[in-house]
Image 1 (tube, rainbow, N blue to C red):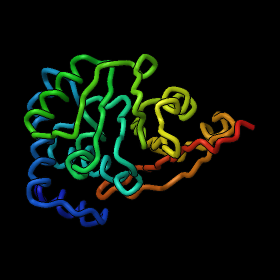
Image 2: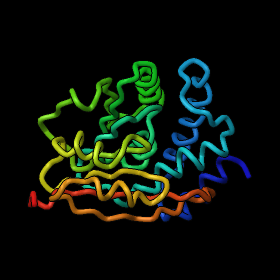
Image 3: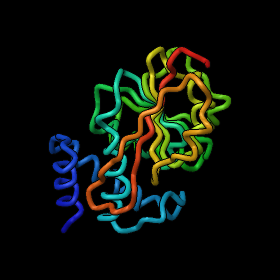
Image 4: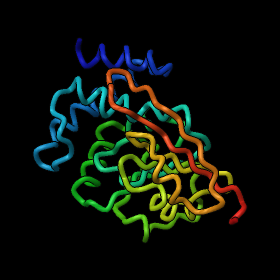
Length: 210
């Protein structure tokens, strides 16, 4: 099956709609990853079909859980999951944050070539990043423990905002390390073509510290 066919089937399996231009951009992003990989060391995945499953569909599996107008992708690396989500959700604005200058240079290039007006790449560590407007969602994919993610990201949330942390196995041990006053929901994600465990931890402040 071609990468395009895998993408179309995967979007259907996830219950996500994408027009022809969005599908074209998603596949163009895979090609950009392949093109720039040797220069920027972006990914170990070289096969476009694997990239569709492990990068695009894995990123897009979190799409139903996003809400609000602004999302921050912490530790975005090569723009994952932020760029695929931004292609599929043009009404939402994304800030893609990473401290690695090479990877942010690639993200800048990808944003230009893909024509994404709703994405702002930023080179910074989360500890020194500030945004007075705040975010409705903070995304983190393979970034850190839940406690570390919450510690760094919770101050950037708008009231009612959520941290969405993508994990492999269910992070039961990490749940016990979270502070009081955090509500937790764990969602099992079914990523088309990916047999490995995928979970999403949805964290939100309850307004109670004890």
